[in-house]
Length: 111
Length: 369
Image (tube, rainbow over all chains, first blue to last red; front, side, top):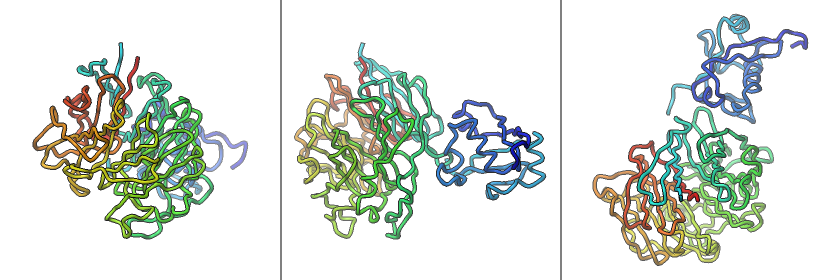
């Protein structure tokens, strides 16, 4: 990451309960500081923009994804990708250009 | 005009039920936080429009909501319920193996009787938290969870939950399933077990200090040393601040159950809802009966007027019974079938306020001037 790298604006789709909590519509745009696009940096940006979401997607202490929350983009399941690894190049390009959103999804389980 | 406000937490949201002092006609507001489990809501005794709610799901974890206008609008506040002091270690699991301490949810919120900004929260896995800024930030009162026996604490069927908090500052009682009752005499700095007299056949040493599945404890404000307990099995009382307990199940048809309540004006009048057994969580014979003792236990009478007396197989959970403070005392309870019942005459007769809510997890009531 370099300090002068351009900020990336990313589209993020939240599940309905988190939209209600953050008082936003189906899609939000967040600014990720310039550099490699990783899952952690993207989610940090979401939480920075919407602090009420702290702890709802990731454990506050460990930073681990909550078990019943999934992360998708470009029809790929990124949930178990290492959070500090750069997103796959094609996915990162699609997200960084705004062509595709990053999806936060409540898992199809329970309820 | 006097207004009565019932706060019902359910499996799929919160509901606010309001009436005048007659408690005959009700308005229903909700669901608030639809789709979320609301284990408990409770208003501040000194500012009734300040209400705290525990909101959680398995998907998105724990949130605390706060209202400053009696439940008309809500604001999410703090949800950082970290265990203090680093790695909390392990407690005992169902199979007796060590199990890591994991925060799951807040079961009970207890606002301070003197300060609307101060509120206590009981968590699963068992921990006691305190906020002095209206729920914005939380600190664990570690004297409870770090009790020397904590590695032996097993969860009850619902988890290792701290479900009862009684504030008699500086004294605090906390009850945990399936551990027992603990008492602090120093504002929560230190806790000790107060379970002498409890007998639980389901544990290796039936009268052990630790391991009792306490379901709920209540005290009347005018008699702080007298405690009433609904245990997994057995209804119990203590008249010395929990130092010694005696059984008061008496002539109950079954002494299994979850809630227990104390009449607001008669400290020896108590209420329970007998449930068939630990595996059959419904009333005996399909008859929903509240039992009242006017003698502080042992002698119980069934209260049935207005309650279903056939084909009723609901449960009443531990925090789902409450009393109001009107002259003609109101008794309230909610069921897993989604009914909330009210009696405006101390339990003699009952009416359903609502029939078809999601499963009711908790009921609290406020009387507003």
